[in-house]
Image (cartoon, rainbow, N blue to C red; front, side):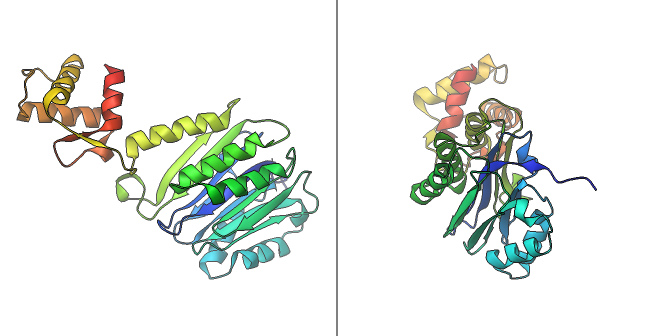
Length: 289
């Protein structure tokens, strides 16, 4: 029988009671750790499986959560049925914010976890316990969207020591009911850095790109009038999308050109309803032209 993968790493699972978001952020000196550690089901919970990882903990744990078991009961059942449970590490959180973290006695030092209201943080082969403590403290004291809180917790864990073997891969996964592309999936954010010397920093850059293309953050909308309208028309003309006059008229030709720009640059999820342009997309247009 093929032995399970040894994903020594640190991770944090979190829940946002205001939005219902469930997410996991993870970093490891292990190629493509994001393909193994995080498992999430919207409205049910999240499971992070690591150390001598048992990937079946993910789907099996979510099934048990869906049946109504608490995170503590889920871990108890998963480990009871696993002869290698002392080599496992797992964090579980449900859609009520209840959480639990388990570290087997045979996990390599430092190994441990902290669970609390709306989060479960855990890690193994760490420089020290400070990594897990920093993740927990940062999550508790950070405001904003769940994705930002999870990423900041991961950064804090790395700053406090992180994986004693170094860095290689990181991932951030957040589920939200109908929060995915076009509202057709619950997979809201799914970002992975599989092999990079500074994966958390790369992941941070990718999250900013995600917000640019799919943001639901409060971004200032700038009216298409005066100098801004002339600037946007000039930009579209330089891009070959607009051939009309550079004046203060919101012509059908201009509106069609701007709509083409949105679709051409994959901003279809960000198209404003009014005669406005999001400030971050205007900045993108300025840099592009």
